[in-house]
Length: 112
Image 1 (tube, helix red, strand yellow):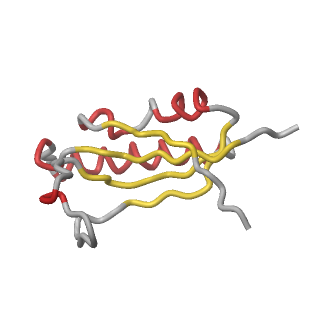
Image 2 (tube, one colour):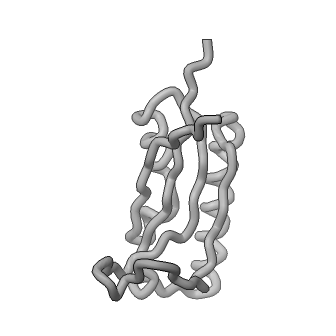
């Protein structure tokens, strides 16, 4: 019986805190490929997206009460049997070596 649940990993960091050389960027890109590939090989990957830094706010803006210098660099939807398993996968994220963190959240299915 398959009890897998969908979880989303949000990869967050402060862009001003990270300055990488071209060689370091290549190393980080390779680490991300390995991280994503490992999850895919375990058949846990549903989707993943890298987000650009170009954005526009609609509605509430950071200047209207929500303040933070961190950004979401990307997200990944995975399927696991538990929050603990999802967090264990997140512990290998390259964002951690860049001073960032991973927010792991359950996904609530939309009702028909």
